[in-house]
Length: 266
Image 1 (cartoon, rainbow, N blue to C red):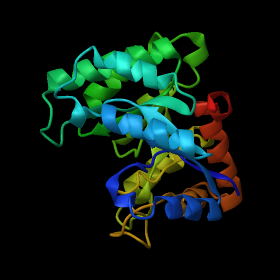
Image 2 (image 1 turned 30 degrees about the vertical axis):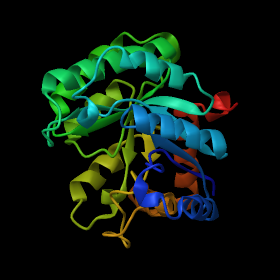
Image 3 (image 1 turned 45 degrees about the horizontal axis):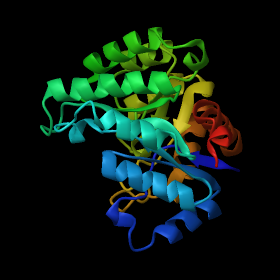
Image 4 (image 1 turned 135 degrees about the horizontal axis):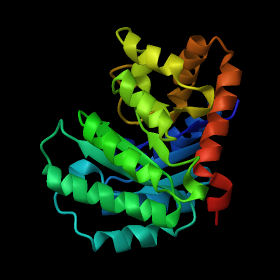
């Protein structure tokens, strides 16, 4: 079974002591592609550098909402330049976050909308962060997706680590987005999340770790890593009454369709 972790922060310092071992364990678990998203200019460049030196590692570049307090339009030029690098498959991680008070809403909106426009310009999908901002976020995404060029209509992006209400899932799917599921899909108290995942069409499901965060059962409380992707696959397979292999194949096919890995290698 060949799997894709569509979201893992491999350049974070929690992997500094054993990053290569983490990548090796992922491969042993069948996870042969990993997308490493940036959260600011520095981490985006680190993601690009890691992708350049490791086969099967890909980058997304962008400014996370919690890093947007000092956002200026000139930063787009740096993101655009990084996005032209082989191995970059998306703009992200971008979005809105009303949980942490790290950036004014006006700055979050400015950074989010500017990077959405850049993604459209570059015909790259977006990796979307949403925390307690669902209504504002989905409204912006619906308006953006409605004006996308034909080449991007089927692949606008993914709402990563989905945790919003069912109606937000429905609106996101209607706008063409994929939904990514992380460790909480395995948690005992996550019945609503599993109900949402059950209703997502098979061709819109993605699996991700969001490592080092959101570790699935039975490793909850420890550092997350791409080798744990099979736990999310197993849980989704059970919800859809499929074999693990069939679910793994479907989520991999979805990731390849959305991120078009083969066109992004050097």
